[in-house]
Image 1 (cartoon, rainbow, N blue to C red):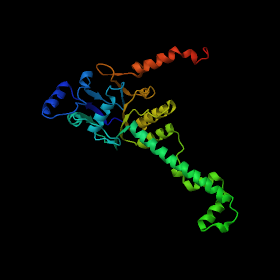
Image 2: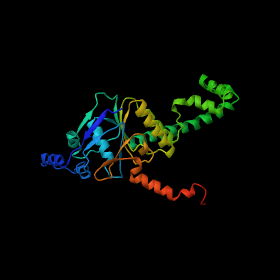
Image 3: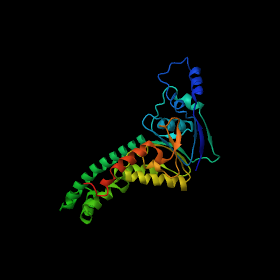
Image 4: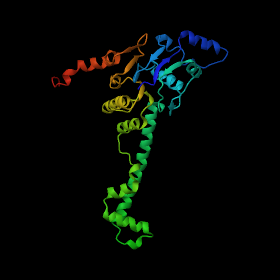
Length: 289
């Protein structure tokens, strides 16, 4: 589903006018001025899935921040805007369809890292609790004299320790909702699945971070299904070869001058991957040891 149809960045003249208007003020930096006019990049037209591809410093994350701020997207991570950022965003323009998205959200790799840290903290606490409950189980299980117990709860625990396995005893006291047993990659994938809702616009900043190749392919399928069946629009910054192959995605190559749209197999990063493995293909068919 295409909600956001077109976005207009500022050209060189518009940026010059902006600096002239504010010339009496002292700014520490001019970010994001001067990035996109050099690339002759002004008009962005969107599809269901639109990708900004490029190396570090190419401006792909900056684009996500500019567009998402203009659309007043929900975000969790703090944005270091710089002196001119709000002024730049204010003078940009865009076109939407008549359909209104349920939500507009920007999700960054930092959001995933924060989630994984929370999971790790929960797991650490659960592991300490499991150790304590394990010792408790053994004490109750091999305590012969119930008269040593001071209250009903202790008698109950002793009875349950003798009729349950240690695993069952511990799990019943932990509560299944507090147990998170996924790996980092599985937890990261679960994070994306929980964040994405139907009928919405999502800006994803390098979502491949923290994901193995296998889970990147699962995320690729999830994004494709969300766009096709659940009326979601995705605007993504990435250099992952797996996500660059998202079905029917429009890819803007921010490393090209001027910026142009390209097919997945025309990107320099993908060609490097191809040549690397092509030169070593005999190592995969058993001909070289």
